[in-house]
Image (cartoon, rainbow, N blue to C red; front, side, top):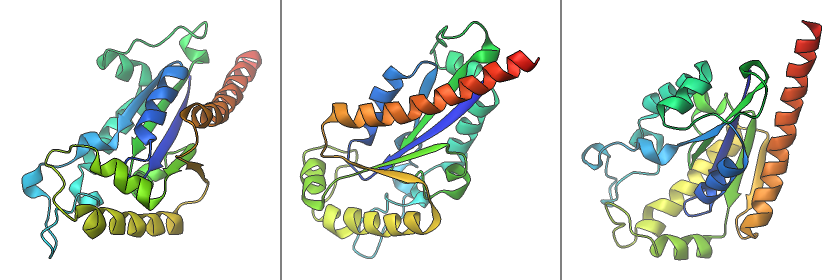
Length: 210
């Protein structure tokens, strides 16, 4: 058995969740862990001097819990899938020849060093400011964005987090979120599938030596 950890990062409303879900549907024996599932309760998220909740930072997330789930998958991906009601697909004659893929999706996945070190592939979806603001304003959040939140917190924090990410992470493939979804998926899927085939080749070589 081999494992592959793929990171799909990006700005808010850039299309990372859509890309991750589509990739999951294309890749056998895969599952998704989404960073948005690990936000702390609103009551404990700090507020800045402007009264804006500081959601766009690592302290607003239960990163220890997220890492625990990622490591649980790494220890036994087949059991992890079954516990979540996702049955592994029979894509190979035996477990020893399977490649399991974990897709980790989120806006700060590359800024958390312990998590970033686990990625075999890194993708980051980006879109222009005006498109991002328009998409963000059309969505309803719980709690809802207060007036001025995008320009007063979301966008400045994106720029700050991106600068930090680029200073500490290499090997990221940047994707244009304005490209057709099918083209983005095809490019990422081809890259990931090539890595899967490379890992399968290693497994088969190992079996032949045995």
